[in-house]
Image (cartoon, rainbow, N blue to C red; front, side, top):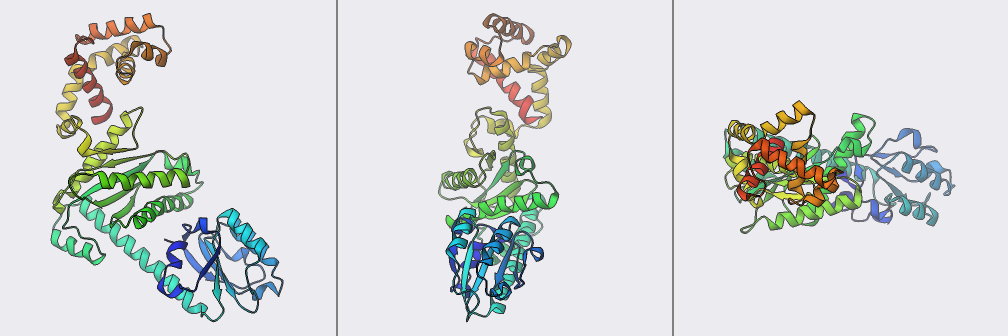
Length: 398
């Protein structure tokens, strides 16, 4: 779908004047309707852009307030008022109402032909949807399928204005429990919320003049972003702006971002995608997590990401499995205790406070952990061994 902001920027709609609800210009437009009935409310649905001339109001301009109240409740995208003999201007009370609701209202001069307006908007909606579907299909082929003809994909990307001969990297924006946050009562409502979620991303990318491909994949948004200079700093800055916009538009939504490594050939694009997914899984392990994690900044963890899963499993079993067996046999929480101990940088006082146990109880647990594992928590090498074991167990082979 497209937004009201995109509509007012269409070349043929330069005479469309925004008179109210400018804060809602990012509302999504599913379709456009021209209806001039006395009561239009039963004939419209959510995310539609309504056009009226006022002929159905029988000369009573004050009824426009009731119309606007009704279409706001039905969550329409906006209203275009054809200014002329029936409505000479949008009343101040209607403007105030729309401004409070963030509901865009536009004035269109009478001499502009409505049939041309509706044709232009509908054509743009259809073309935009086709382009988005094609880009999603492109990204699916690039990231999830064996590449039979990379050059053909390059040409296809160039058709939409993207130069994939330059270095790129994959980013994944992953919300936490999106369906619960959106409180969508059915699949249709959830899809609409996801589209809004994706539209926020695209709006920021447009503002930043960033030529990035995007697609909605499950609850996540996958981006193919140009990689500039010698670091990922530019993309992190843009992703930070996207998260700031989420905080403003969708307060309370928890979002994490995984950024894969740089790649130059299309054959390596899938590897960047897998790196981004691994980084996201790592972020879930962090209790005081940053919102954005980049593969190239992961240090030693990049080595763990590249180790074969069966070898990681063997490492985990050698280092941590004995603690798991003890917990299972005696209904204890030695593994959890060790996790919190490392998260608190081996500060016993803070660990005891988080676990709601007496300091002596914690000391006894730590001694028992050393006894079970055969490793000393005072030895830096042993601490690193245990900590890596926990990371492998909770993140890489979960």
